[in-house]
Length: 339
Ligand SMILES: *[C@@H]1O[C@H](CO)[C@@H](O)[C@H](O)[C@H]1NC(C)=O
Ligand SMILES: *[C@@H]1O[C@H](CO)[C@@H](O)[C@H](O)[C@H]1NC(C)=O
Image 1 (cartoon, helix red, strand yellow):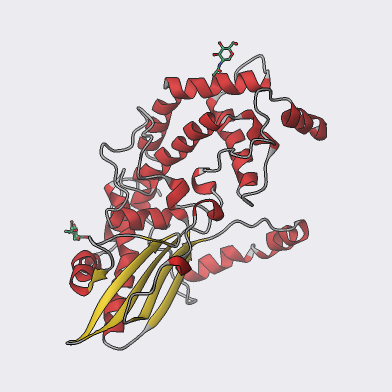
Image 2: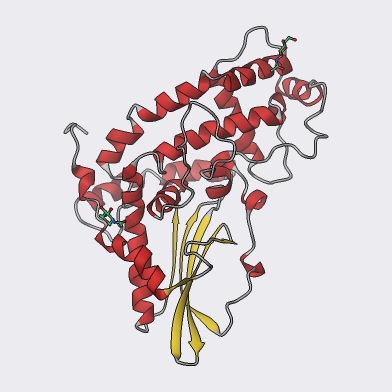
């Protein structure tokens, strides 16, 4: 049965056939494969007369699919999770809580709050989205149109599979045209803009607490304590860090009212799988002593955080010092005590 359905999906779409369409759309929001959008840090010329003295990196996990046997074993073993969490609550162990996941206020105001469903609902009611529905119906030949929810789930099926490698195609993607995929990509960007980005001021506060660590490490490096820090996290925290730094800010802001085609907040480029943010502190020789320069990279492409290239020390302090005041006390400031 499945083979049958899949075969239909492969050969059934008239006009252009997905499998022969070499330019099929590859930007899938946060399920974008890293290779689709990455730069290569090795292409960046080293700064002249400088040497890196500290590196700070935040990276998102990449894609991987476990094997069946492994899944079974993992299911068994992850039962210890509860014990580990209990131990943490009781003050045992050396693990630390991840600064945003345990933020009650975020949970209440953002994750279960009304803003995200409102904006997405608004977009689902635009002509753009209705055209996606009609287009999917035409391509599949179904008598009834699929609901927006079904369409978004099928988009997930398509892009999860598609994200394993840039070369892999998935028959479920054949039910969408490239134009449909652009509209669906926007749904993801709305969600992330409010969940992790500039859409809610709280996100910047949460991101600031990671950047505080970056700042402190570089200040210590300047005093002689070099470090190489790598953190692994989720797209959520990367989004929050960009919000804290005021990067990729759209004006007007992203809303469900209309797809912003040239938007800066675009998860396909910001937080694909294995997304990463790297800061490098360089110590540079100059005739009057040493100076410091900080370079930034997003997905291995150099990012201009300060005007005119790498930040000098004064610019860096200007931008980052304020993060030392970050704290997460506001997280407890919730109305629902039952949480
Ligand atoms: C779907 O097919 C109908 C009937 O042929 C047509 O009017 C409509 O424009 C098509 N929709 C899209 C998005 O192509
Ligand atoms: C500095 O940090 C405080 C507290 O996090 C914040 O309220 C304030 O807006 C920040 N100032 C600037 C210039 O970013």
